[in-house]
Each structure stands twice: as structure tokens, then as C-alpha cells.
Length: 179
Image (cartoon, rainbow, N blue to C red; front, side):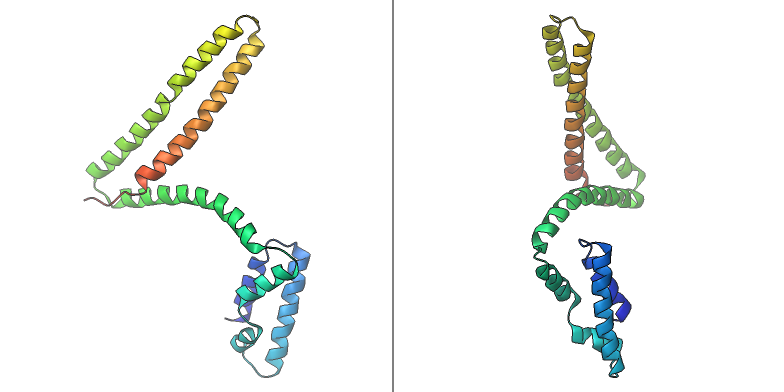
């Protein structure tokens, strides 16, 4: 690996630390590379002498008493869910770009069915909202009624988004090109 790529990989791996500490470590490694270059070695040989960049990153985290496995698992668990949705969406677009019009029509129909099912989830929320409204009529305060409506609406939107994304991921991740 050449010098620039090695140092950039090291910088990327030290994202958890502040910028000043990252720069100090990069300058240390750059100084080591310069020493090897002065002895007549190439950049590739110098980086090999220093060692694998991933091992160096792990060593730096260990020196600072930081367990990288926990940090990466927390970061990856949150980002991987979002990435999965974008991957499925990208897969759907790729398949639709290569499909016939009839096959694309079926995909759009499935998407409309999913939107309809998500909309049908609102029915139980109407029932609960109206039941709560009947109970809150005792207070005869429009503010309390509006707060109740708002709470029910927020709960519906949270459930609807989770339902839509979960079903979307299951249905559309297995799309295949049909001509």
C-alpha cells in the first residue's frame, strides 16, 4: 500500500478521536515512513515494515482503553437498518429499469397495495380516538381533546412508518427481472 492510502486509511480508522489526536498519530506514522524511505526502501516496503494498518488502528484504540468491537457494533446496527432500506429501494429501481412494462405494472400495483394496507391500519386508531374522545367529553376542554387527537395521530404515524418499511423490505428485496 502506498503512503497516502496508508495514512488515509489510518485517519479514517481513527474517526472516534478528535482531530488533533488523529493528526498527531498520522504525523508519527508519517515520520516512521520517512525514516524507512531514508534507508532506501520504497513506500510499499516502508508501510509493510510498520505493519497492517488495521492492526495499527486496533493497537491505538487499545492504548487508549477503547473497545472498538462495541463501538462498531453500535454504529453498524443503526446504520445497517437504514442501509438495508436504501439497498432494497435501489434494487427495486434496478429491477424496474430492466423489466417489461407489464412486470413494472405489477410492482407498482404491489406498492399501491402496501400503501392501502398501511392506510387500513388507521381504522383501529379512529376507534380508539373516538372512544377516548367520548371519555374526555366529561372535561369539555378542546385543548385536552386536541392533545388526545395529536397523541393518537403520532402513534399511528410511528406504526405506519415501521409497518411500511418492514413490509417493503420483505416484499421488494426479492424482486427479480422479468421480461
